[in-house]
Image 1 (cartoon, rainbow, N blue to C red):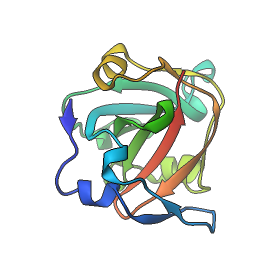
Image 2: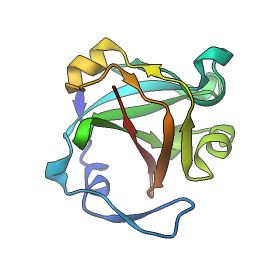
Image 3: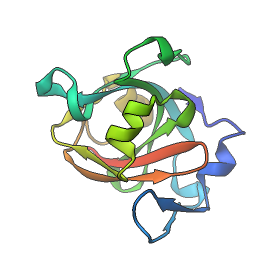
Image 4: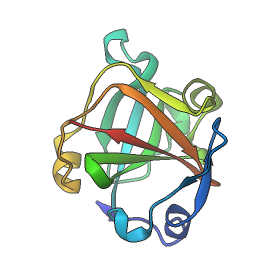
Length: 156
């Protein structure tokens, strides 16, 4: 578990950002609304029943180090996960770790569609004190910022 870096922290809180495809600005909550603790994670995109092909999030694994995902499958990317208000979690995806195919398939339209539940690792659930153990299927807004994308997801 780590804390949000000082370089990224000012970009996460108290600013107005635009969702990729919607015209209404979204205001990020002030710093005291979010947990300042985040965990590094690897996220595999796709659908669990389709052997991690298709859309959605197939698998999340915790990691304690930055991994070079450029040598791995384009379905995999590095991210950070944090507990968010109202029993949600926030996933942060950094531009430098996204391949163009991931961007086009999952982020370009401004909505991340999750069709199947995705279990969360116990070390993430316990480490961030998240109330649920899996991501709940649904349509989630992708919020685009200068250096990263943020997706707030329901878990249960």
